[in-house]
Image (cartoon, rainbow, N blue to C red; front, side, top):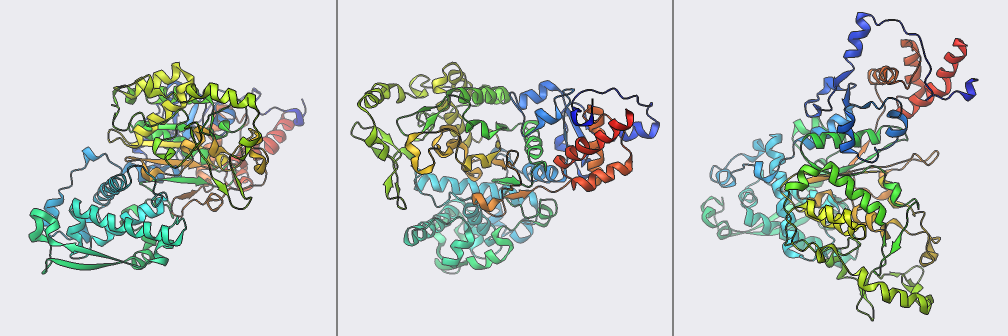
Length: 614
């Protein structure tokens, strides 16, 4: 065979010399664990080392497919499932490791108030800081639910504004007399209500949708609130106020100038990714093609499973938009993919079986999802036709047309068919599983009845977003595929080239919001993809991802790159012995990126060595 016909994945026998003691020791230093465990104990000394996962372990995390190109490039020869610990992987999981559940937090707020504790010193403790932060986030979520039970308000849709409000309250703990009013939960919620009033007033008066707290601060630099001693109840004597009532001003602009309102203790800043502050919300991982984005998502997923988190994993977002499976239109205007919904539900069941078996269902929020996964409260803003059917209707001011103008062109036969299918489309899983005790009952019914699989997923996700039983991670690889038109077509979308947008497809619509801050105990981690686009790079600005939630993948350092090459030799992907000088050459040519490693070896060095052997 000539070099041009050489298949890099075709096994080639190479006679190797027995390993010397130094080579054997070097190889042993490449691996941290052989049983898929120990990610929680990784340190900076572990960077560059591999964790080997038994196949059963890996298939539990990713039952159907792995993120990125792992299945094609890494696992197709010897089924050795392994992940390298990189700096980005380690620092990201360091941030996530600080999160705790409410039952594990033991903060005595009354004692802090009575002792007039120096909150400036307390906030320097990263453990205490994160616990306070999480408690404040839960209170703000409760305030949102109490004020707006239907969830129609959009003021906290942006994590930047949500986390910004919490961050400002934490920094105000350094000041008297407001600190005790923030520590006391009822008055804390009252102050959060004042913040929310200000935000809603801005949203309505300016008729704009603000996504960054800095935009809010440009419009309103001071928030004036009223502190009332009697509101502290039994702790009123510790109000640190002379008068019964006091007007207090929170200078928002000062917080924006200080760490962009995302202040954190020094220990957290030292061991966190540069510019990333979304430890309570999640992150958007981006970078050039082949930079290891999918590897970071796989590592975070493995870490979450090891730490007993519930993980909702979507390793390939594109399969929901690539027109390979049947799609059906629901009467509310969304499109359902029964086959893909069933597959996703099966994967969720396999990955989280232990949790689903024991996690109870909150019947107060159960049964609110329709067949396409849309919450009843969201349908409150929908249009209702003459038959009482609700569907999404909006006006395009640029084109001066309603999005349901296509109805004027339906034939009589089509109208009759819609009328015939309507009763079946109005069914939902709560009609059949009326009082499930665990999430497993919902999952099992959805798998057995694929027509209800999308509804089952939506009900499970809704339960997980509101649970205090476990931490939750939502992982989506190829997230940016949902921000471009799908490959499905319909005459209803003539204005967009007849391509159905992903936000009108049920599963993508359910997950495409970057809303990790609305998960009571959890995060959402997403990654961009460039695998199918030549010379194209997706940036956070293109999808309006808020600042401080983005992680840009950097190149591998030489030692990590060297270990990757040595591991590929063991795994059989590299079938030649490579000298140290050539590894340094490959590192330079590839600029330290994974994709460059493959190209540097398979396109040049492997052919050169093949000719030499011939």
